[in-house]
Image: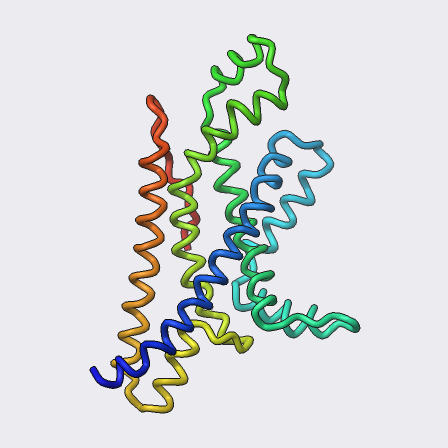
Amino acid sequence: MQLIRESLPLLLRGAQTTMLLVSLCLMLGLMLGVPIALSYLYGPRWLRPLLVAYDRVFRGFPALVLLFLFYFGIGNLPGVHLSPLFTVFLALGLRSAAYQSQIYRGSLLAVRKGQVDAARSLGMTARQTIWSIVIPQAAYFSLPGLSNEYSILLKDTALAFAVGVMELLTEGKFIALRTHAILPIYLTVGVIYLVLTYGGVLLFWVMERSIRIPGLSGHSKGRME
């Protein structure tokens, strides 16, 4: 117990880095995922092959391979310098955007066509219908999938050790190697991951309950790995 108490500040520092990465990657995924989903459904046809190619690459490559490609590949190009933290943010954020775009695409398709037809019959333009009718409901439908994406992304950040980011698992690994108390340290790391995972899932659940739309039920559209 004494060792765990002494190690906890370092582990919590690593947990802060982990949550920073998760938050940034989720935001990048949101900023790119929504436009990708809207462009796929409502954009010009010539854009669709490019979106499909992006989706295939970032959902098809393992996260660790993407980290290596960005850090040792793009990061070594002339005039390009990517810090380890920015590399993880960029690689996992773009990967999350590909997954989130599928969550949002499914959520947009879950909005009943009758509501769209009713909005158009009232004189609303296509843009007004999308922003006022479709997107608010799709945002609600996407929450279960985003909760799943959060928990998977949280565990994906453990791969950041491969490029030298001192996140939670890396801090735990160095403490375990230094103290030779492998089992207690990794058990503590696991408990912290559990707290972070289910704390975030609970937050998404509270959000879903607080904005519940009468007559509608959410659909889980998360990614499965």
